[in-house]
Length: 144
Image (cartoon, rainbow, N blue to C red; front, side):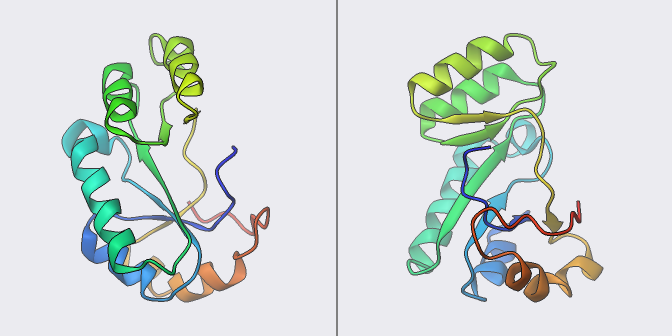
């Protein structure tokens, strides 16, 4: 994975993103599993754009999960998404990966380990999750 190795946090809403970014630590926001199916790439890009606008000083990466849908993955890339998850078993995976590479984008075959903001016990661990894993390459213990 070429994405900077910031701690990864799954967010399901702008409110979740705000809670994460309020701590001021570098982070990678990850969409919910298969979010491209039910929320769409435009929603995700708007959420991330707003989060960046409100937190310009916080280093932020983001990943959209497209599950097994190559059409949704291509649509996301066309809209400007730089990093996606597309399951390796997805039809046409290699074609999507080649197109992504030509655009300077990245396709992951699986979701990185992450803390999920939809789980109350995990939100209590957020500060520690971000503090422990703040330097590139520091992957720390898996939580996902």
